[in-house]
Image (cartoon, rainbow, N blue to C red; front, side):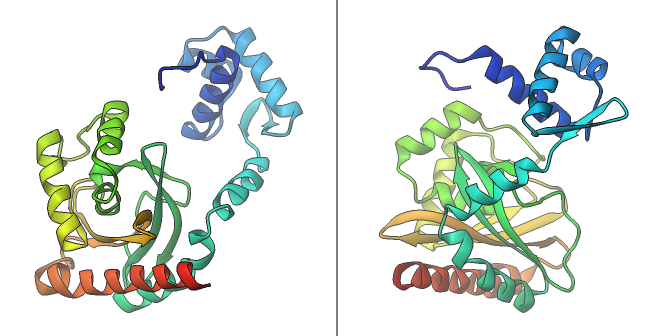
Amino acid sequence: MQSGAPSVQATETSFRIIEALMAREGAGVTELSQHLELPKSTVYNHLKTLERNEYVTKREGTYDIGLRFLQLGEYARNRRRVTKIGPPEIDKLAEQTNEMANLLVEEHGRGVFVYKSKGPDAVHMDTHEGKRVHLHTTAFGKAIMAYLPEERVDAIIDRHGLPRATPHTITDRDELFDELEVIEKRGYAFDREERLTGLQCVAAPVMTDDAIVAGVSVSGPKSRMQGEWFTDELPSLVKGTANVIEINLTYS
């Protein structure tokens, strides 16, 4: 949580409950009370308020996230032009590479998947549209950070830290900045099992008017992300896709 303006405790409690419902794929009052270490009465009152406003549902004593959030999510996603212009190019990239192609943006210092397209050989992953990840653990996150002002990157690290996701995750600030400098000069980034063991990724930034808008990436198993395909051919395809999206954003 950011410091500064005072927080509204009741609002924070509601969102803690919503996030707990999502993480536990539905839960009852007692389970949530124990998990969040909150009084049952508090949990119950928040849930009933959320249910009354159609943000949660209740079936046989179990509360869950309501579909009203789908409306809000679609609205938020469609407020960014890149989410309307980018998907057709991401579909082409998935077909070209046979792997999972992704379009992602940065919000509040985290990476958010806003579109995915699965190629014929793509492996199942833990990602979905709306999933948030730490920027430093992903190729697209590093591709985005490489084009942010240094003070903005520092602020992101101060807020979210550099937690370790795998033995390969960069957790040292100086090491991360060194890599971001290389990425900025090269124009693309690699994830070498830095978020998920066995998975590797290539990403490139989407820029308009010298400002970072999004990241384009292709993810696949380490066994296929090897040699010149991984180090040369795939970066060229990813950069090409990012460039087409940039042109369409600029002139459409």
